[in-house]
Structures are given as C-alpha cells and as structure tokens.
Length: 177
Length: 309
Image 1 (cartoon, rainbow over the protein chains, first blue to last red):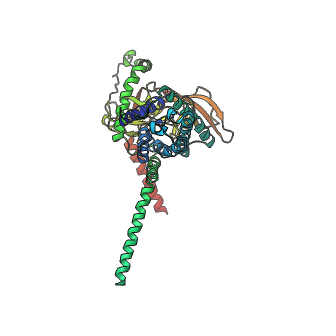
Image 2 (cartoon, rainbow over the protein chains, first blue to last red; image 1 turned 60 degrees about the horizontal axis):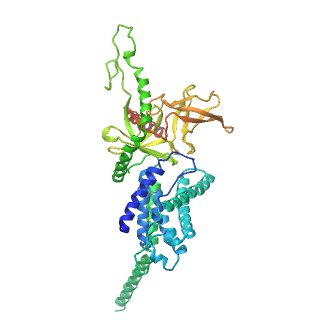
C-alpha cells in the first residue's frame, strides 16, 4: 500500500473514530472530552512538506467541525499542531540513520521517551488552544485549567493504547538493511 | 537627461524591493500559510452566530448527513428495543384518550378535531406535530446539537420546538437544510429558555451549566413561592415555539441563593437527552403572523416616541 492510500484511509478512519465513537460516547464527567483525531497529524510521514501538513491539518479540523457544529474550533487547534510538528520533531528525532530508515514518527523510530514527549507536547498544545478558544465563550478559569490537564492525560492514554494496538513497522526499503 | 536616469534608477530600486518581498514570502511561506489558516479558522469561529447559523448545511452538511444516516441505521438496530418501549408507552397513554373509550351520554353532535386549519365548531389549529428521527447527537461536549432526518422539504422550519418520544422538551430547531435539520439541545451552555413552575405558575430561566446531563438549572423563581422536590416544570405560556404546559422536567434539588430573593433549582429533564432516537417537531402555525404583529407594534411605539421627542 502506498503512503498516499494509507494516509487517506487513516484520515477517514480517525475522523469516524472521533465523531462516531468518542463524541457520541455517554457523558462520563464534565471535565472529560476525549480527543484523539490529531494523531493523524502525528503519524504523517517525516518527508512530507510543511505546507502540506498545515493544509491537511486544516482539512482534518474542518471535517471534525462539521459534525460538532463549531466551524473553525478544531481547525484552529489542528493547524497549530501541524505547525508545531516539524519543530518538535527537530527537537527530538535523532539526526542519524534512523530518520532515513523509518518513514513515520513512531516509538520504534524515535524511542519511547522521545516519542511520548513529542506526543505529550503536541497534545498539550492542541488541548490547551482548543479549550482556550472554548473558554473564551463560556466557563471559569479553574475549570479550564483542570480540563486541560485531564483532557491531555486522556489523549496521552489513548495515544499509548493506539501505539500498543497498532505497532507500525514502517521501514524504507533500502539495500543496507 | 538627468531626469530619465533618475527615474530608471527609481524603477530598478523598486524592482529590487519587489524581489525582496518575494524572497521574504518564500523564506517564511510556511509561517505565512499557518497565519492565513489560523485567521480563516478563527474568522469562522467568531463570525458564527451561536444560536442561529445563517449557512452551513450546504455541501459539507450534505456529506455529514449522509454518513450520519448510515450510522443511524446501525445504531437503530442496536437500540430499537428501548425506543419501542417508550413509543409503546406513549401510544398507550394516547389510546386511553380515544373517543371510543367513552360513552356519549349527551344526544348532541360529537365534536371532531381534524387536521384542517379550522373546523366547523370554530376551533383553530395552533400547533402541528410531526415525528422525526435523530441521526446524530453528541453528549460529551459543552455545546450539544442533534441532527434530524427531516428538513424544509417536509415542512420543518427554524424556531420549531422539539420534544422527545416520552413527551419531554428536547430543544429547538436552529437550522434547516432541504432534508435535514439541526436542533440546539437543552444540554447546550448557550441555550437559555423561559419555563414555568406548574404549581405556582411563576416563570423562570432554564439553562445548563455543562456539568451533568441529568441536571439543568432553573433561576428567577422567587423565594415567596413554595417549591418542593419533585415539582413539575413545564414550558412557558409566552413562547412562540412551544405549546404551553408541556413537560420539561422535575425539581431534583432546591437551593437558596443567599445573595438574592430567588431560588436556584436543579431540574432533572423528563426527556433522556443522551439517548434520543425518535422525536416530535412542533410547528406553531401562527408564528409568522405573531412575529410580524410583534414587530409592527414595536415599530409603532418607536415612531410615537420619536414624535413625542
């Protein structure tokens, strides 16, 4: 399967997961809103151009927005994630050969610690920005801070579970290996 | 001569500047794209009218509606039994109201209400009820909406009331497409509506604080009223969207606000707002006329005030 087809399928699956499973889930607690759709941006290949990541982030956010009737809310947050992604990857990804032999950011390519930090920073930025935009229209400040922490914890939990369920062994075919 | 040279120099200088601008754009193209996309999304977010969306159920709405109706097929299969029970219960209560259950003692003519706007006995129809199916609804957000499978082509319009299959208030239609409509649920923090306490008749403001879907908040009921747990809350008399006296919920907690003369009541909604399948949409037939009358009156008063000054 080519990267393009793989990512198109992944886009639809992750939007449906967010919209038809996580959004319609019974109300657990007022602080809990599970978000995982930005994992699509986290899993995009290393070699993809920065501009394309931004455009894909915007499309992803808008498709979630059309279901939740909040045009622009998720789009703004996922564009932010798409913008920060290359910067964070530059911070954590090893500069040696692994980046060449692996296609996508994954625990195998970056190591668990670096990968989790990468996911943590991006999901924190996503949730903080999204909830900030929500908080501007409604809510109290303490509630907002609590919600950022708990939502980020839940996002991280789901990302780790996703990594354990779907171990991606994506290597470039090369004659050295 | 000097002039020409000067102007040539000027043009070259200008070209140099233009080139610089292009270089700048190329250098920061990603950041500029980021800014543009951010501005676009924030523009969407902040120009979007919170309770009435002007447009939106267009092309993209059509796609989401398509997937929602597919998803609904599956969901129906899994949850139909519960819904059946509720509908059966409501049917049962209506069965008991049928004319055939009663013996007519009086020898006069029986009265029949039909779907015509006016019948011979002078009754005028005010509300029309239509059934609809819920295609998609969220419950975990602060701002929850429902999507229904009927739209303007089957007589649905903005500002119509929505009730659940067990008769409890659900919300109000805020946007209609051709075949689909969007409803703002009671579980939406921007939704505020006037309801009344059935026993005393005093009106209050119903809202949701975004905490539990089993708990709405009712304010502005004066402390002079006697309110008990279990009191019924019904829709108000003065709404253009809802028939008066329909169930909204029951009082589950009575709190006294020490700073004011009003109660803060916690209301348990009658409709199970997190598990809706079939709903009724209520149309007020005279809504347009009532609204116009209201507007005309306001204009008249304003004119008079202007004349007096």
